[in-house]
Amino acid sequence: MPDAVVRRIRFSIIWIIPILSVLIAGFLVWRSFASNGPEITVVFDTADGMTSGQTQLKNKAVVLGTVQNISLTEDLRHVKVRIRMNSGTNDMLTDRARFWVVRPRINGASITGLETLMSGAYIAFDPGLEGVDIGKTKHMTTFQGLEAPPGVRSDQPGRTYTLVAPSIGSIGQGAPVFFRDVDVGEVLGYTMPPGGRGPILIQVFIREPYDRYLRTDTRFWNVSGVQVGFGAGGLKVQLQSLQALFSGGVAFGLPRDEDGSSTASEAPADTVFKLYDSKEDADSAGYHERVPLATYVTSSVKGLTAGSQVTMFGIQIGSVTSVKLDLDQKAGHPRVRIGMQIQPERVLDAKDIKHGALTDMFKTLVANGLRASTDSASFLTGETMISLNFVKNPPPPQPAWKAKRWLFPVRLGA
Image (cartoon, rainbow, N blue to C red; front, side, top):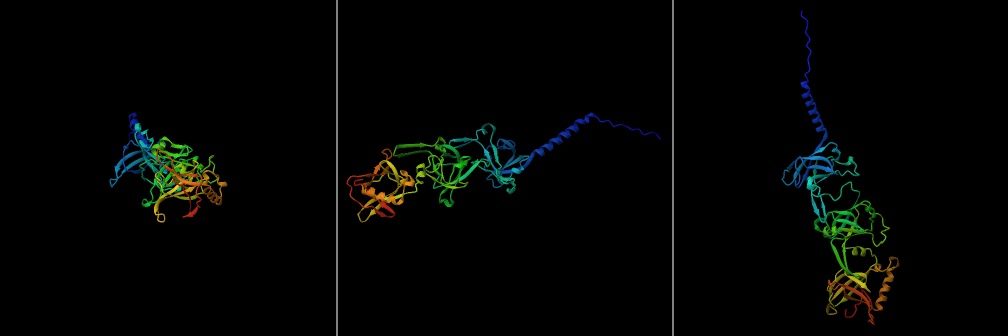
């Protein structure tokens, strides 16, 4: 029996190349799957500026995903953007997440998104998990994108408050909020009342640490545009800032405290404040003592409106509350009824004011010849005001209380 011949199998070096190719390809496939995260869908109104395979999803300039496909929704009214997320992003995809497209935008005096002129638009991503228990959130893969950037990111420290006003004027989203001429926040947006009736709710955000300055007695007022008025010192022109001129603005302050101190408690988030038309209106709201007056005139009151000044020796001590035509059947001729309110705190300290003493003081002043008359506040605008001045040898009228107001005697010939 012949001996078995053992042949040695020689490994050809030529097989190393295909084997290495297979190993490298397998590694690349594994790394591709390992680096990819979940796939999500974000719905927008338009795909303007987005391109499949190029547009990226970012959070704080860090790329977290790439757009894979863009298509129309079934109703053809929106677009669906399919995005492949990177690995490690699965925990961020909750019902708190927000998405919006960053592109150049002009809002009032501010311009944002200029960096996209060279790099192209991208999708911004805010996980919204700052201070939130992840266990109480819901994992999602389909989201509704925002058509405009949110006013503030979830990780921005600060508080949100609500202002109520009959109208918003020129205040728009992104308008600044000022405290002592310092930009400390911005307007997030507004909500119309149901049915269009009632006040408008304006949401504002105050950044930290300025949010700690807000107290329960803080007052907000509108600083939009240029405010022109006439006071005891003559013509007053006030412009808060160039940005407020174009986009509107809001300011707040502590009532009648020159040093900025306040004894009121700190205002928690979501506190509701009234928005006044001007700083003067906001200051006037802090005057608690008010003496209601009324007077009748038979001359022209052109230029006199609610809010016009009531002055004494050129110093404002109150304001006009109403101007109405009154048909006096007893006198047989029409006349104008002017409602006023005197605010003693404009010239006196609150601690020195006693309500009973105000009535006695009012009677004494009238007995000594104090009379009301209409006067021109500005020859330029035709604005009219009420002046209280003393006259010589006046007839001795007796002040009367009518319709919850003191009837104030008018100067003859006024």
